[in-house]
Image (cartoon, rainbow over all chains, first blue to last red; front, side):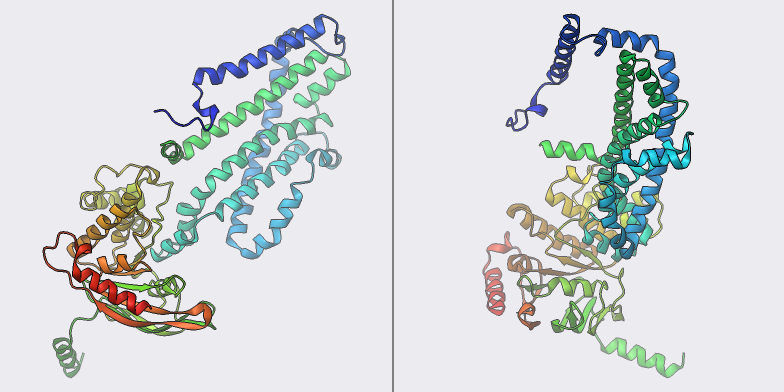
Length: 267
Length: 268
């Protein structure tokens, strides 16, 4: 059915929505390649896209093994960050005093750049996996807590009153009303956290360690192989993208009612 | 039990009419424990009856609803359910608001079953109990839909089925159908009155909408006052509504207009 063209992105046919950004990327790559080949930018400073792809292929096995390390650190940190954030948000929801005490602190702590804490963590915790995991926990904990806490509070108080007249327990009110109400915000928080997790792990690896994409990056930088540097960047952004897609998939599975809502909004 | 007491109770039961389904006796309520919002309200609803309590916005209607539902304890007065004192005890009467309050994350059948599941019934058992009622409540075919897929009128029907499954035979309604469009509103009101009669329920509708009150109730209590200005609200009158038998559209009869006029006069 024809709808007013209020939002061009959703009105455009699917093929166009895929083709347009791909074309943009292709043009940019061609310009990049041309700039280096023609000598506009010296090749020892900037590798061509073709060289980057070659490096990616040559080092594929090595990158894969570093990738596993980074992914493991990020996943462990993210899981712990989510668990901690969940527990904290539940406490903030359950106890008004707890909420009042920690809510401003949450906001302030989000302004602290994790990059600034990383050297301290390495100093305190050494060169093993621990400082990496801790940095990931620190950078994912706050978005999760904040999104869940505000999600829990978004429940209509009339719903809670209604459930009380049905003699619902505190746990039932949480399970049936608060948790689903927080799901939407939780997943947007989780999506941000997933990218923070990868970036956090890589930053911690820059500062020391034996394995991981960050370690690989420091090594290739020291040997001036910038093509490999770019290869690592591609791997990192691919990882973040894959994690984000994974979160979207989880969201779709956990919130089946969302699709019906979108459909009825379009009507 | 001593015989004399037993006989006295039997005589009492023979002499006295059946206890009202819902009775508020001399209810005095406050928002903050200091300023009186509602003073000395007496309301009774007989079994099988639909009554309305009508008053302007801000006169303390919702405060009364909360007290009758047992969510708050009144400063003074009592709430009786079939003669039993239920003051300050939630979960004894069911209630329904203008907002349907369906949980967006549950399918209609699970929303409707919520009171059963919350009281410990298994989901499959609760679904089996609710399913046969969908037809009578005009919801056939909506069992597995999400709330967002239903129109406002259908959502209110689902909310009322959920209310019915709360198992209480007394229902409180707060402006239940005012948010619906005009035609749906009239339809749903009549449907509601029919279902209440058919299922042997009793209902008290609390509303600011005089039309809603007169078209649904057999008796309308009129609440007036301005608590914000320090004048507690009281029941200033009671209007009996007679429905002429066989009238195709009650809202167009003289009886309807007469009752509406009387209520408006009392509201001032």
